[in-house]
Image (cartoon, rainbow, N blue to C red; front, top):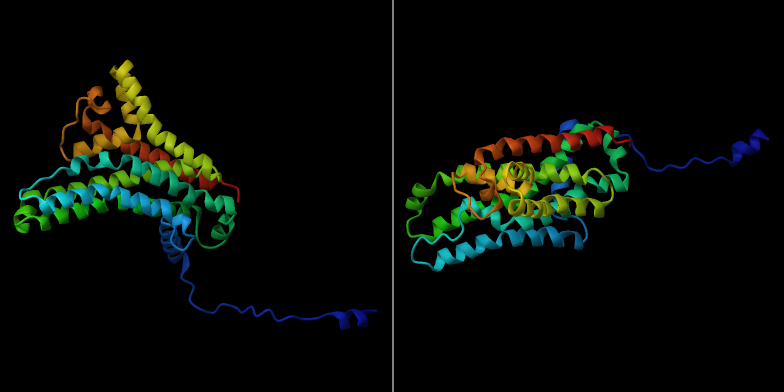
Length: 296
């Protein structure tokens, strides 16, 4: 009986080989995940439909820059329709759409596809995963908050007759543009990640991000026209677009139009900076907490 069983057995060579090469470790795993996530934010390496919204939104965000450069090229004087301090006003909606489209893709897809156990089975830690995803989302947002303004700064200088004179007159704007662009990108990346990571359902995350980023501004407008006072000051600090606008105006030492929600609140602009830092820290902590406690 045993001889028959042994005769019926077969050994198959599946071609698996032991890996004897260099193991790059945790750092390379982190960098690979960051690069993969950044590519995924723009749909690179995926089907064509995944590229449409991110690329279209980035091009739409660059439209004010292209318009300003066209005006600068044909105008005989230094005609700056769009100032760095108010550039964010032109890209708020496109920024919200980008966050709503990309954040659920970065943070919910791995939960939905159940690929998180593969990440955490090796040297990559849960916090490493969260940091890589947050960094990729913030970097992608820089294509909206920072890159167009850098192109605008260089383009305005090249469009004029005196590039050295333009750089001398406006050089202080460059660090202000960089600092404000990075702060806004990290701020909205953390908010979007905190929302997008809470559920594997992409549709739910998308709607929630749109509600937090856009509908809260509508609520602030209603309160500005009806209640005002201290209530409006508190609401303005909690509304992402209003708080970010306050920080940008404070960095550029620019005034706020009286008819806006921020102007009606009478809030000192410097207060928006610690408010943005606080919201950024809280939402980042919520994202870390989500993946630390997620049962995979």
